[in-house]
Amino acid sequence: MAQVTEQQVRQALARIAVPGRDGDVVSLGLISGVVLRDGNVGFSIEIAPDQAKRMEPVRKACEDAVHALPGVVSVTAVLTAERAPGAAPAAKPAAHAAGAPREGAQPDVKWIIAVASGKGGVGKSTVAVNLALALAANGLSVGLLDADIYGPSQPRMLGIGGRPNSPDGRVIEPMQAYGIRCMSMGFLVDEETPMIWRGPMVQGALEQMMRDVLWGPLDVMVVDMPPGTGDAQLTMAQRVPLAGAVIVSTPQDIALLDARKGLNMFRRVDVPVLGIIENMSYYECPACGHHAHIFGHGGARQTAEKMGVDFLGEIPLDITIRETSDGGRPIVVSAPDSPNALAFRDIARRIAEKLSGGEGGLRPPPRIVVA
Image 1 (cartoon, rainbow, N blue to C red):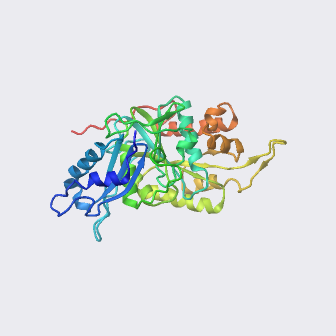
Image 2 (cartoon, helix red, strand yellow):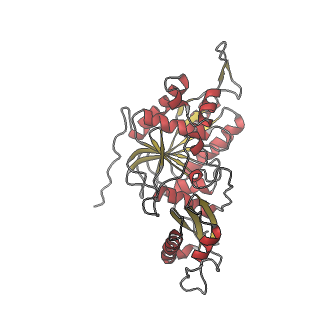
Image 3 (cartoon, helix red, strand yellow):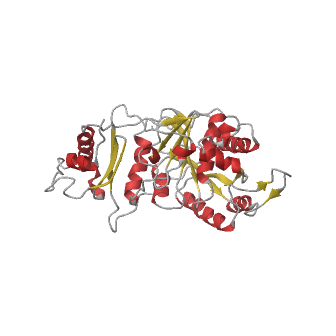
């Protein structure tokens, strides 16, 4: 089957007129961020903030036009809009307790948790994938959303190749590995293709990966957040019903400084912080068993105490954790009885207990009845 080209996509979109304007979506310069991979097509339609409702039929027409092209398997069109100068920011969400669902939650997902870090290079994605697999090993149904649009890594860490299926060209099925479901931008673009997208485009893509993926019933969805405190983090914190956030840091002072910034960001948007994990906590010599604290030690525990959150546990600096994750067989599934895997499972157990409000496995979230 011949592969669709960007030129063919733009030619198809050039037939879609914009109501109230003299021109089509292409000639008016509204189309950007075209991504093509194995018949999966994605693009953004840039609009003014107050045009979302009026432009929704245009978005659907664009998807239909591209989906009709030979070789197209699925189409995802995103409306993106930057806030107009002087416009009021989005309303701050109401405070809520850990484990309580927010309005607009995925109906089949009980709890959504973010695994975040203030900076890159602390092993956040490695922790996220092993944490998701540990939650599954503890008996829960789990999904993993790779929210790092610019640097998706979960396809490689889970050893997943190929592309997602789409039953109707509008929604897609998540990929699966080791008993968990996963969605990532890495499934839709080549591994070495840079994502040169602005903030609103990233926000739209994240929302669609939540809304237009057939996740099915889940106990927990783990969101592997990008590092930092930018647009993507705010989108997930303000528009996704997060039950809580887990902060990953190394013991280094500079990493802990940025971890505190990330923690405070979640507090500002009223997302409960479930606790802090100290990754690369120590190195254990395989010959003599001596613990060497290469990056310092105890900093995350002290930060947790100072910030008034739980310290969830330590993960050592171990080459097997890195090798198994890079090789697509994370330590929790490749060596389930190893001390490293058991450390992840213990942290997962503590998180599950916090979400459920106590010991014993997850209980259903409280039912909200509007009189």
